[in-house]
Image (cartoon, rainbow, N blue to C red):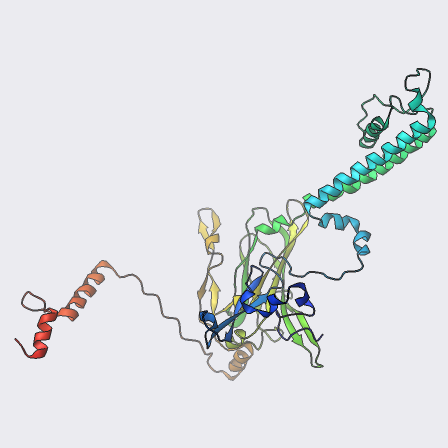
Length: 439
């Protein structure tokens, strides 16, 4: 597709037709939203420091999956809309609540009105409406004297209320057949609509709101190997049963034959072969992906990571313990959200008789010495027996001085500025006199 460009997050074919042309041509009007990520690039300009010559120019990065798990994919030019009607149950469940309630009300009202009209037609054809005051006349339905009463009888029949005022007689075979049809059809409507509402109410989408993912992913050493790590946690005391984790690398790719594949998905192994992808999610866990020969990050170093454009999509699945329904939570990490040389702060502490999780530090990381080279280069150095290069540790933050140290520093500062005399400090005027040779 010639409409695609070489980097993920850039325009795709015909995507520009969805917005006015000026919004794509004028960079000043490209306002980042909560669905975009501002990343750095070189540029020049005036006014904005980011657009200054040699500065960093901002451009928009479109996420494939939002932090809250929503997928930024819209289906356009769908002509085979009949496929939605072939699976009408799922279509109704996926509708918004206001439309779902509207359909729920219309279905019941339509069936009541439809069968009420048929009951009225039977009474009209038989002549029951002309003999409402005739005590010797046996109608199809007692006390049915118009369309309103026929509509009420239809509601009583389909909902099996049975007030007892309007009752079908045994002298009306067509009414008996209609009664059977309405009873059967009403049961089908009840099963379909009540089942649809039950499924929609019990959907486990909101359960995913209490599943947490760390804001950033980190790259650091673990057991002598470079690893990509992120943290997951569950805020509820009711657990996710049979929880499992998956991860996908979303990145554009060009094959050897020249075919360009936008948003190509590559599996990231987070413990599938060892079983570490199956989680016992009682407390927050750190999910680890090792940079080995089968990893897409095998040849990526710290410098190359800053130049790459990709997105890591993580998917947590499991069954809700309370309902037994499958729940899925998603999140993603852009390349700018992967921190090299960081490690997650511990959130567990042992209290008296239990473990306590501190979610205030769930997203916190700290610096750890990490080689800036790729995992492949580390493996080559290990084969040669050479020492693994480590970056210099960052300057430690100065701890606040004690009161005695502050007093000593203040006294030394006064001595350096003014010196000590016979009980008096030298003023600026005395210094000027001494410079001029005056006493």
